[in-house]
Image 1: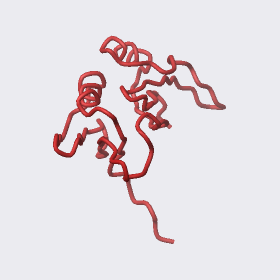
Image 2 (image 1 turned 60 degrees about the horizontal axis):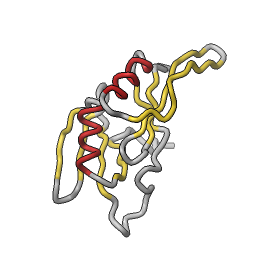
Image 3 (image 1 turned 90 degrees about the vertical axis):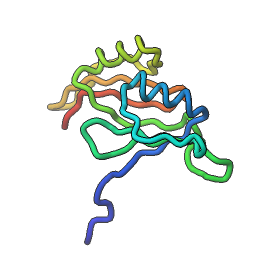
Image 4 (image 1 turned 45 degrees about the horizontal axis):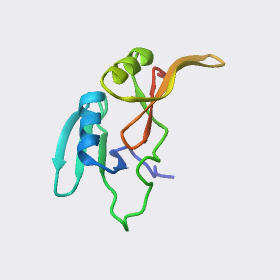
Length: 129
């Protein structure tokens, strides 16, 4: 069977306030903003080390999809999640779960969870496998 999925182009999240979200992703997470459209209430950021974009926009009434503040499970990588989360807090970000050591047979990594201004959650992890 041929592949159904051949890659990941972008992850899109719905937000309530484009300016608050832009400030969070740019100033707190340090992501590079690729484009912004005030008319469309849409911003696009590069995810370091990937060709994948993180896009966000204000959800229209008939658009469907997940409501702002309900995204969870997107895992971002950093070699020292505890240090990254301290810096995110220093920059005004919200920590949903403090960093902790996770152990499975043959695997150890640290992860914590942060939230954007709408409550969308992102894991920061040093897991590489």
